[in-house]
Image (cartoon, rainbow, N blue to C red; front, side):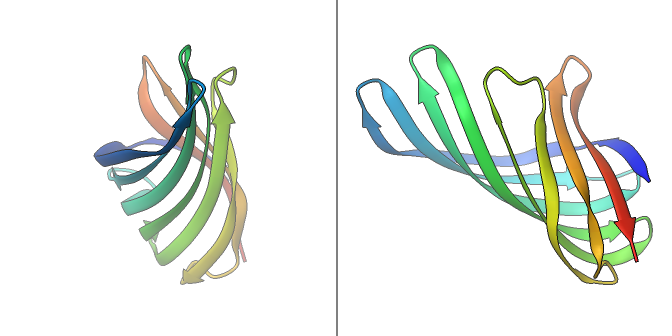
Length: 125
């Protein structure tokens, strides 16, 4: 059952942990708020990022959503990432708890002129 929903980034706390030869390795803690859709709640993500003088090169993230999915309370964890030449960030749901136990699926994050949004294609036993 795929759906697409917008979200708001409510916190972005970023730091560099290694920098040499023009390549910067960083991490960020990011929180998001989801409302008015099939997802209602918040998420917290830890991102590892690579930057170059030309700009961002890649990132990978582990993110936990807490709230409701289609009216069911619980949490689920997504792993997603992208490189600079991709227009979207693809990932998978890798764990779930509460009324969402057994949740599986894929996620796609997009950030463009339409704003930030998440597409979730999931199955729940």
